[in-house]
Image (cartoon, rainbow, N blue to C red; front, side, top):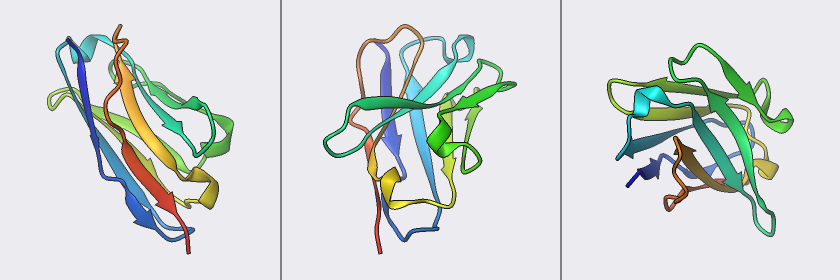
Length: 114
């Protein structure tokens, strides 16, 4: 079964940066687009970024455009989310998912606060 292990979260000051990593296994990683989601306190989980299987095309939710960059390394079966100019409203648990997987990993907590 597909498995996703997110890492790299933590506490960061507003305006700071973090780089999240997601290690995927259990499916043909290079054949699928990959996605980052987040769930803020008291909010629903939302899609924040998508990358095509070869990494040639990306898309972002409006609140993170220009600040976040999704990338992938198909050799390492890993997808990344570089987050710059972080804002308090970016505080959330961040998740990675792709393929036809219906399961979620544990996510990684990102807290943006002064």
